[in-house]
Image (cartoon, one colour):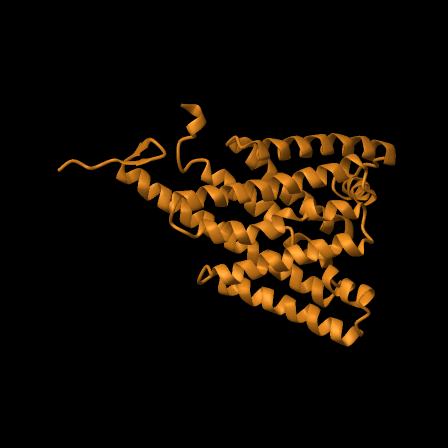
Amino acid sequence: MGRRAVRVRGHPLDPSTLVSRARTKAVVTWVLRVALLFQCVGMFRHAHVDGTAIGEALFELLRWSETSMLIVERGLAWAALLAAVACLVVTSRLLLGFLAGYFLLDACLGWVVGGTFAPALVLPSDAARYLLPLALSWWARDRDDDDRLATWLMRVGIGVTFVGHGTEALLHNPHFVDYIIAAGQRVLSMRIEQAAAETILTAIGIVDVGVGAATLAGRRWRGVFGYMAAWGLLTSLARIVYLGPGKWPAVAIRAAHVGLPVALFLTCARTPDPSSD
């Protein structure tokens, strides 16, 4: 008997293509799992050293004692870390829902507490963090509809994050200016004046908002996803360049900035793009 072709969204797929799709799905699953684990490790370290927005809200807004605040803040960080480790073995919707809620709560309280540049941009800038667990939850299922929803969660997460950070760049976030000046001195061995750094930052902001909008537009552009992954890694590492190796948690907590675009890059090869018909 001849091999029967399977059709996905109107496109015939032979058995070899199905094997490739299954392999890609497994790789993407592990990309998302590892990114989530790194993110939780970074958050765990923040909770024990620098503090989180959750702890700040409990201490400053609700007037909890420092002891009570630390118990809750660090307890949640432990729970998140253990949940991420468990999800390396089994993709639990309950655990992933908890992780999404945990990172969303931290983003919301970061907006409420303030103390950062443009607090209103915390929610969009952190979108990749709280949508990553939800994307993994849907991606781990076996139906094509679930895969499409997971892909859109990935797009929204990284797209909104880039738009948020791009807006911060256009507003000349002082920390971003400092990163550019420090990179010039320590990496390129050249002096960059503040005015020049702000000009560079404006260009970066335009590009970030542009690629973020392109991602949200729904087209499957592997080049855009590849750029976002590389830029996400580079900007995360800028924290170490500026603040030193001790700030590695600031890199780890931004793992979704790399993991989501890498996952999207890989999913582009899974099925033909319907828009090309």
